[in-house]
Length: 166
Image (tube, rainbow, N blue to C red; front, side, top):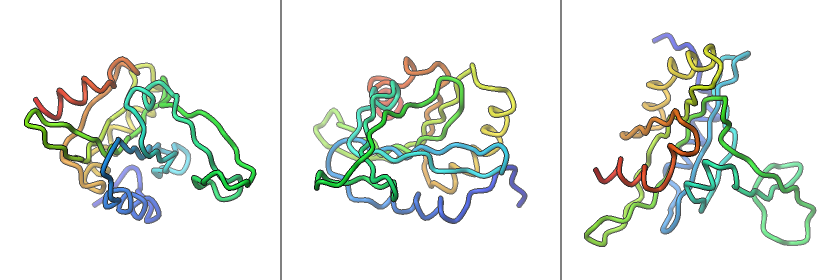
């Protein structure tokens, strides 16, 4: 089958590790973008224990090793801090491990795909993003897709809860 945008093996491996990571509290997110020049999908960032609002509004703080770009503990090594956000004018795929509290008291962690495609994005990027969505959804092996076109206002805990419980 021919694909407009390729999913490299490195990303498939990262998706598999993310999918099978053991979580017992909080939300985790893996953010993917399309490299328009290379026509491949690339991992942007990965977050553990992040709120939906922080993910949408760009308040997710990462502490990374400068050379390895991996999360570290506070062990005296130099680190680099920066804030990341879902851009207001570029589409992204967000694989979300979501802590869902059911009305009967049960807790589950469904894997959800957030299709972040702001209407202010460049039309060429939106077209590439749309053409790769189904292939990425199948590769990530997620059943539920939440469409977000109106920025941070469209990605809240209430919106995600209503999509998953409704």
